[in-house]
Length: 261
Image (cartoon, rainbow, N blue to C red):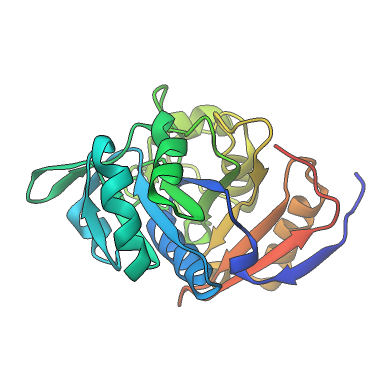
């Protein structure tokens, strides 16, 4: 495989005006969504965050500004709020005190346009707070218009057994990885779940940029992390990758002349 040059960049450089970002996988999606949104806002951009799945109240506790607005009111309600708050989380309804309804994934372009935001970030998957996952037949709720896909996986899963307490939908993960339930998870298993078209790349639009995220990078040895970096570097679909440590400090790495998904 041909190696490409990689350069460190700001998390705020991962996305830009006009992007529709879809975050999938497990082990830090919501934290990554708000970290990206806040860094983009610090760059001077206006950002809308949302989900294309059901949203539970604890997930939205970090939202700087939450707005309940159905699609027919987006054009009138959202721009004035974004004039004051550069990061706004939009849900379409609140049927119970602890649950919100996200957006239908096909409405992502309408939300970006009607809000007047520069960037839309959609959490397009659920994982029940597990470290890794594989998507079911109806998952992810991928916006067909996504221009940037961010699959997330947590390296704290390394060495742990493939079991429900660590992995969402472990039977599907076992099928993709070709291993038995209870087997210890390895670096190669995490890499597969990030990049396999049945897992982290499932339903990704063919023209979207791919930026995998590794969380808890300080849970593995430097030699192991370097092996993952080399795999990203050599993979033909990866545009760049993002690392986060246990304190949720992010570092982004852009590949030169990187291709699309």
